[in-house]
Amino acid sequence: MTNNKKMMKVYTIMWGVIAVVYGLWMSIFMSWDQYPYIIPTSADMALPAEEFIAKFDGMLYEPLYANATVFWLWVIGSTVMLFLYAFFIRKILFAEKLTKATTIFCIANLIAGFIFITWYGFLPFPEQFGNILTDVTASMLGLRYPWQFKLWGVLASLSIFTNTLYMYRKNNYQGKAGVIVTSLGCAAIYVTVNVPSAGLDLVMTARCLGHWATALIFAFLGAAGVIIFLFHKCRQKDKKYIIATIIFVAVLAIMLVLLVTVGKSAFIENLPMWVAYALLFIINFTSFFDKKQVKETVNA
Image (tube, rainbow, N blue to C red):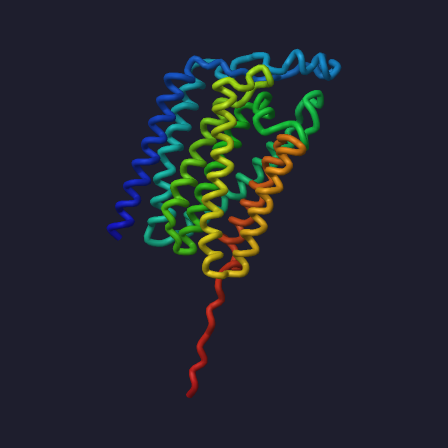
């Protein structure tokens, strides 16, 4: 019990620092940022591909934050959300028992996250930018749907974080490394959605590098929290978990191959997310991975 209180204090401090740093960064450095979004007209849509891309790629249009109130509401809301992650750790990982309310909360945001990122990945986008399955990334979609992109990041982060914790708690696993890497990964996406890349003209700028770095941190550390648990189960020689680990790692490898050979796209980016959602759902809310209790026969 003492060790649990100590670790809960460590996690609370960690998330407190993350939230404060994020809030200061948004307040000081992002308050002047006029990141735009793209809304092509019907006339623009009729332009030849070369003219269309020349006009829109890297160009700045209507600012996302129409007024200071909108900006500060987002800053305050997203900062408070980050503070809540320590509360989620307390209620899921360190509560006396998993309550029905906690279970409903976790399964609800898991389903909501799956539905939303799937819907978001297929939003209509100008064909001049390329094929939706092989060329249009989640960040590119954010150029036209900026608030949906922010919600995409919040839901993806929340659903992966809470359900990874739920998986740990259900299986009596409290791996500190898993909690920390999942925390850092799920916090990183809050930077990604605030500084999406904006065309080839902004490649190798601080904005674009920050976007890429935090997106990769979310992808790999979010997956790492799941993989750490799967490896733990593999060491127990659980055949079902060994197969699940092979499949999950294989999907990550396939995604990397597709990124190199085909290119970035929201569809390719969603592949590991879909598998992670399916895996977390099966582990957390079905009995498929649960060990069957062997009843002892008592001889009279």
